Image (cartoon, rainbow, N blue to C red; front, side):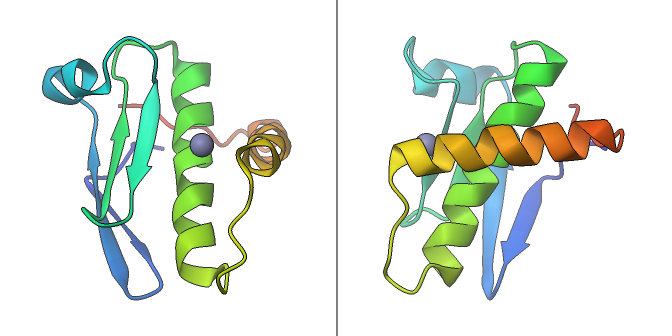
Length: 99
Ligand SMILES: [Zn+2]
């Protein structure tokens, strides 16, 4: 499945940026990030397809947690665990994300 330009989570639309500009903005240490205030997800465009799916799922979980988490924000480790689990389940069904 192609990564969309935007994503709706509840009543919030998040822009998804995955290009040379967002790669530059992410710097060297991050492959993706989620910004609640800017309603934005950035993904590194140069990673391998499997990694891109994993990053996208990870940032979706942050967005869903932000909107539906009822103030009980997941820790980064919990988010990583959910990412690995959801990535495995979706991959087994042949669901992945591409540019
Ligand atoms: Zn994270």
